[in-house]
Length: 396
Image 1 (cartoon, rainbow, N blue to C red):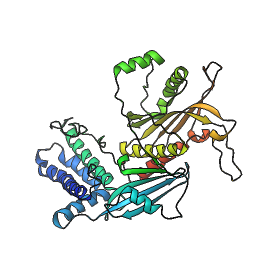
Image 2 (cartoon, one colour):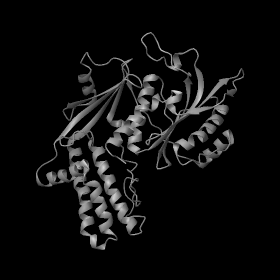
Image 3 (cartoon, rainbow, N blue to C red):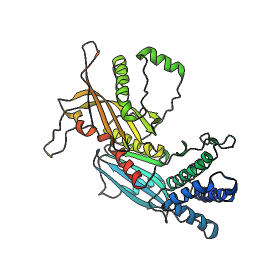
Image 4 (cartoon, rainbow, N blue to C red):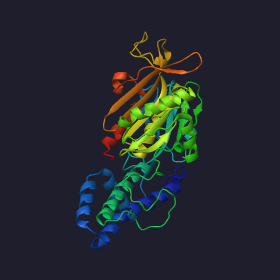
């Protein structure tokens, strides 16, 4: 479905096939129940858990409709997200003909003189079913896949089996390991389906991704350059002090520290990236895309390590707007490690530093506390909002 997203007929064909395949999972399990250990216990629990869920009811109804009546009634949407700063944000939805390009959508949307003229705008292509208007279809079918994976995981666990008896599959993320989390290749927020425009200069913002494979030789070189360190904590809040110590080692040696974000799920790091942005609009976009990434990964924790400007209090301009630290004369350079969890935990570490005459880094005393007390949680607001949306949909 993902590969055919921009091809309406092919997308519909794969969607129909997938929905029937997902429904067949429960049919096959029911057919073989006499041979399945503990069937009544774990299958009854599955039915009890999923029956109230609108997505699962939609899956059953959609399968019946596809088999007995006709195709689903698909709508091609564009979701427009406009971001002016960390707080000012607006989202709208528009319906367009299925074969209309993203550029044509943008032209139609911005022909309205009342649209915003500052900040950054993202246009996301979305396929939705008329009977399920609040879910994009890759997202909807992924959630159903996860529920069925939990069913199969419970069945395997009851039988004392850890792996499924299957051979190598394509793509590589499909393995014999029955997991209760989404497959790594199930990206429901792909950059390929999004366009970004900086309203300040009118130019598009392109996303470029470089994947780096861990190599032990490079790890050895890093240890020789910076010294040995490791992150042993089992969650983002506990990891923050360890990451601050490693950040100090890097900054002392290199005189700068690239931004780094670690995403956690169930106490383990599931993703590490080093986001780069060249201006403030790019920064706004980056953290909204990080929220997309958190949703795709089902991450329940996140840690940010970054060099930043910081000021200890709020100062406001003549219009009553907060003056950001980057625009203040009393600003300080700091190493900032911010950690947060979906459960509501927040923690920040700030280490002020200065640069000596010969370029050496001179560290001040580290201060710590909840993000709100230090006034540095702005970049995480898109992630907090996304976690709230996931909670409202009961996506666990």
